[in-house]
Amino acid sequence: MCMCTLIDMVFNTHILHLAVGAPSEQCWGVTYSSNSICVLNGSSVDISCTYKYPRDHRISTTFWFNKQKSSRLPVDLSLDEDYQNHTEYVGNKENSCTLRLKDMRESHSGEYAFRFTTEQGEGYSGLPGVNISVTGRPFNYFDNEMCVHVALCPPTHNISSSSAGVDNS
Image (tube, rainbow, N blue to C red; front, side, top):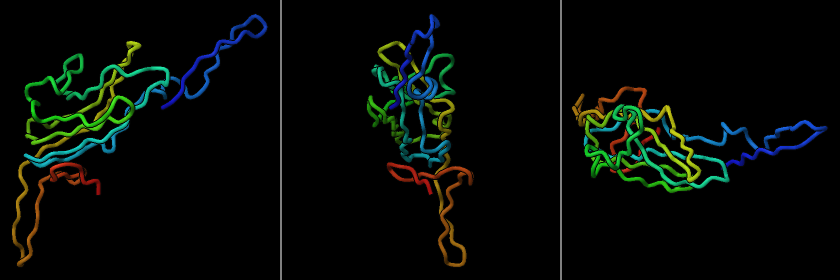
């Protein structure tokens, strides 16, 4: 967490504004472990992230949204019918914002971002978010008696085929 405090000082009848700690823009933020992930159809993936906000604020709401599905205001994935039984927020209201997406479908491809609001009425969306590409099932073929696993994901994406987690190698 960061500390952003503004101190007013009177110096020879002039008011001097002093920022103690990091500038306010740096006190707000969302950091994702990856900016793009390829997920196999039917698989699950964790999107790991952390967030920060001024120390004197308290978090009131936290949620993830799909940028393509949110027109003007971000819509909480847990309230979207298309994501019922497909999302699990495994973060907390302090600094962890990990989202678990389960039984992914190709229609779930898109940019996902985290948003939080504070009791002080301020909010922050972590944009740009994480681009998720959901692709068809992998297949195996034999080449000179060696089994080759083909995932059908673009080479620039991290691939996840496990029931939880993402392979960042």
